[in-house]
Image (cartoon, rainbow, N blue to C red):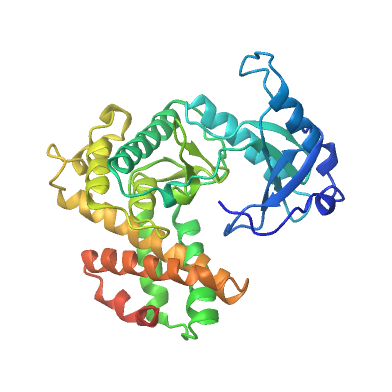
Length: 356
């Protein structure tokens, strides 16, 4: 993450709800953090110079639990949104129970959150080293933890599910903002039928709890991976998070990391998977069964087309043209998956994306 602008604390402190938050020290400044395809804004908040000086001069030995953090992150919503704030905090508790590392929540108001600062190194920016492969193995183990806890506990968002209706609505968003607004592609009955077919087929796959936006820009690298942007977690297709991780629109995933992640997933606790899923999981990790390939391709096609809608909105409505390169990656992932399915009719209907 990078700073987008200078010190904006004087503006932030005037925002409703901000000064009600329990900052651990007198605030000295705040810098907006980098790009997010979100209506929320994120700021790194740091202590005053006097506080920093006192910390540097102090010789007292404190336990880690007593030491105030060097910085915190302020999450600011566009307007009061009690429902969204409560969803974030309750889902954070759920992930903690699943033993998945997420930012600690220090405080919340109707419009803002104060959370732990996980640092600057995103998995998206990690160099291609042997450690990167291990990080992808770790990220896959997190997926298994989410799924295992989902099997043994209540869904943190019980009214939400990636069912056929929601999957279809996501593709309608792609139709509206990527194809029509951005690429000036007129709608067609053929594309509508193909999108409906894809949503229904994907919804029929075995389901499990998923993060739902599990990619390298939502994974912070430290002693262990910290997972962020988790508040929309819900039940969805079994391979959804794995597809999101490996079919990443923000970076190219090295082949060795991809293979290691797939092997880790297959080696997971199969007793926690639905009985109907066992047939999808091969005994030999490097050889996918036809059922597994079909399930992965369906999930990847829907997920990548959904992402194209997000990127189309960011470029055509929000004016964030930097997301165009992400859209190009998303189309490559979607096209590969659709070709694997053999759905030539859908490829024909999506030819406008070839201009990316």
